[in-house]
Length: 386
Image (cartoon, rainbow, N blue to C red; front, side, top):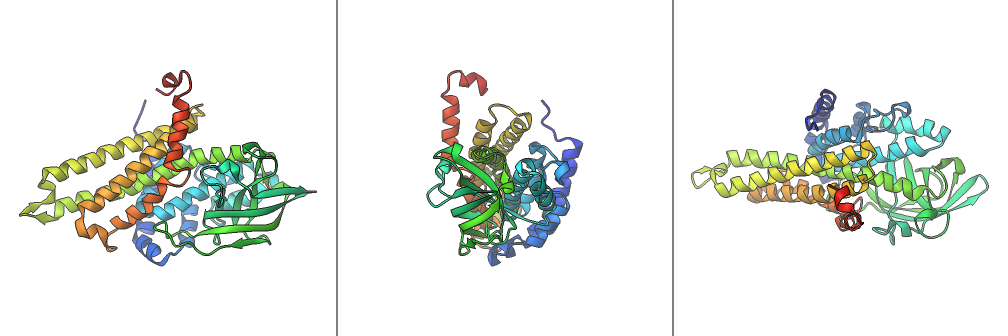
């Protein structure tokens, strides 16, 4: 085992850190306050390859491993959690299109998505299909050389600002095997966008519902085979869970560094806060838990890269643990700042608001526990999962 980053990973880390500090962090508070979607900044991230991190080079991406992606995304999240989180979703869409789209569709869309010239949204969740994603009701009926899509999606990141939608819709009977995936241009007639949702956090990316009213798309826009959509979605979510866990790590790291600096400079009762043993212990626990979470996330990414049969379980464990710890570290950092942590002049309250949703999306942390429980209750599982 080698837990050290290699030279390439250190270079990726330095590039992402420079971009985060120069292009994300100075504007994050304004984007949050104004609910501004920084499309031009995301395009600049694309120029560095950050919009197609693990998309194959043949389709215009960097072709990196998932482990490399965690190094990059952690640094971006330290600059602006909300914008980095959207970039992770866009990366998933880009990878799906590059991997499963048919010839002309992949050639047309994948390179532009990988460069950040076009942006994507992932449309899975519905009003009556959240954790139970396989029960989705949006339908895609085959009519000759086209599909007609009707239904609705909710909580879609980037909706109304993105250019391409990856839509999961039912083409067959009930259950997972009846679901297919489609690449749908966002301005196709029959697509309607709901109101901008006013959220607790993640305010630099728009979130809307989308309705599909007899939306026609060519059969060539289907991703993979008919009935393969749920498999594609789950493969995407394995990586998505590692990505969002990484965003929690990056945000928590930024909060921890703020807390460390505050304890060294803030004085009470005639001495720096850093001299109080109770606060030393709090900071020590925050660091220990954050390092443990980071290693778990990187292990899950390595499992994905290796094609390990237990990768899904490790992705679920990493997502559950890192997003819980990430939120706890951010909340503890706010507490260590006292009243200053609660005002918007400091980023701590934004870190708390932005990281809270990570425990909900890409599968709630309760669903992550279901996945892990199923894995460990199989006969012989305790040996397999060591």
